[in-house]
Picture 1 (cartoon, rainbow, N blue to C red):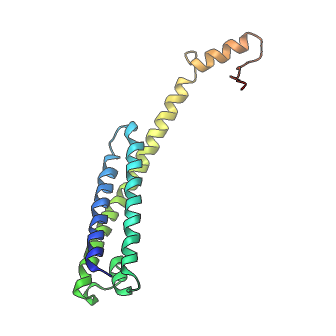
Picture 2: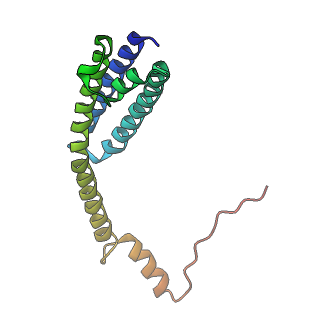
Picture 3: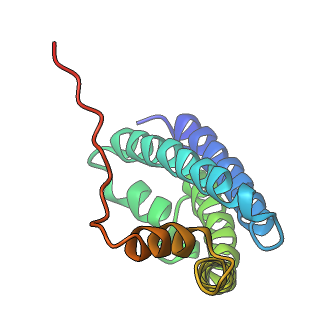
Length: 156
């Protein structure tokens, strides 16, 4: 077990989660077209964090005291000085995670509003005399025949 590796890896996790928070904040007021790329960016960050988290747990090994410090499942004052920095870095991560979790309902609500607006626009575009789909359907039905859509078949 190397305390410095654990500390440096936890610092990297915190930096990544700060980036995740930044991307999450961008999702609150980005354009509709940017939501998917930002969601994908968040997922790539999470994937990196998962790998680093496994590395820290492996580095902690069987030492339950350092693992408890890493998970913040102990009393800080009971820890040896060398483990207190691990505990503090994890507390910083917990604060970042709390802020992110408080933004999630806003993002979800925004996405639902965008979805509802898009569905309403689709309904408006597909109804009434000006709708292209209804023109084609109306022409086929008024022609008295069956609606026929040929398939593109190729033989090899």
